[in-house]
Length: 188
Image (cartoon, rainbow, N blue to C red; front, side, top):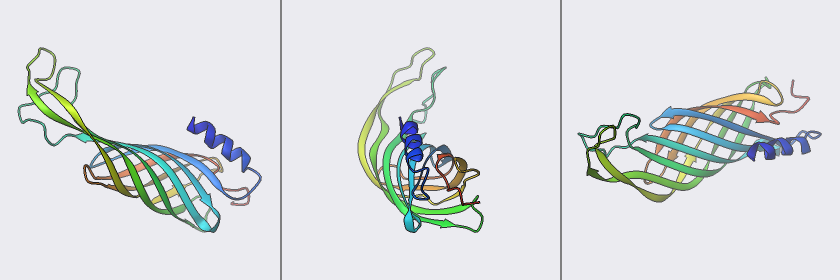
């Protein structure tokens, strides 16, 4: 659905230079493994607004020391699923194939942490049962990037992702594929 919105929006604005509307999809690693989807709009005066979804997970810190996963299972994960709204500035360089983005904002979502471990050895299964405690979280996001709009409709980006919240703060490096209207015709 997001892809249809992005493609439809870029066609509507195809005749004008502003705004550039494009999507990003990618992932990264650091304190958490990371997956992200973002819809960006570069407005006049080099401003950018982004709406994003991030899913981050890492091995939970509160696992019992004698825990072992089952044959087809992994260790319990602490997850963070958040939507964010960011605002920032675009720094266009002399070459249209590289630009800098400096943006930050707020996010809100759900953090799920494994809790209530109960010893229950089973054959081919983990030796503990557990449940997930879910909490609503609000955080601050900082996400600068270097973008490489290779063509007017396709490119890549790379940069750090920082999410500070009360439950599970994230620090990761992410790489994304960009698609949509990344630059205008005269940007050569």
